[in-house]
Length: 210
Image 1 (cartoon, one colour):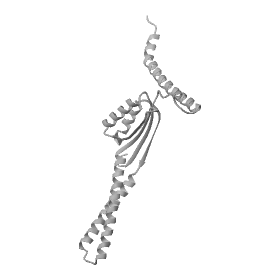
Image 2: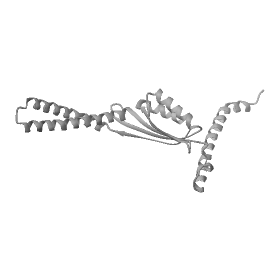
Image 3: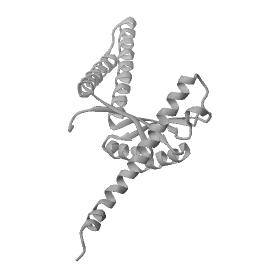
Image 4: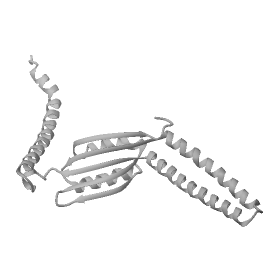
């Protein structure tokens, strides 16, 4: 939304053929879109990996389309937080604090009173400058969060089937069933695309010649 300050975040869970390949694909896509990988973790024993990626907001939709092409999407969700009011309030507060700093600096320069009065002004000036630093830090945080969307990606290799896992039998059965469904979905999608491609030819073949 034009003019609004939005913090966007997305979560994507994938079942992939090879985690290493996906890692390379993520690195290439992030670099192409001008983003960066904030964090990554790989668990070799379970062939799973996760990444926290920062992508410019205007490239988020395109990046998510690429994510979906790297494997079978098991789950996906997103959220948007509008922090426009926070940004406006923080900016206004920073302006007020800087004016207060100038006033105290002038007062300190012109101060000709007793030492205790000078020390009081210096103490107040120190407090205001500390608040300015905190407010500037908050603004930098909001600017970063609203300029780059955060994408949490988790990938698990398809070869990690239930009977290869350790744990209760019920968990292994559930894992096998889940993986089988993923395979069926993937194969079914391929068969459906082939049938769609052949449909026009089947129609032509059914038309009598002569």
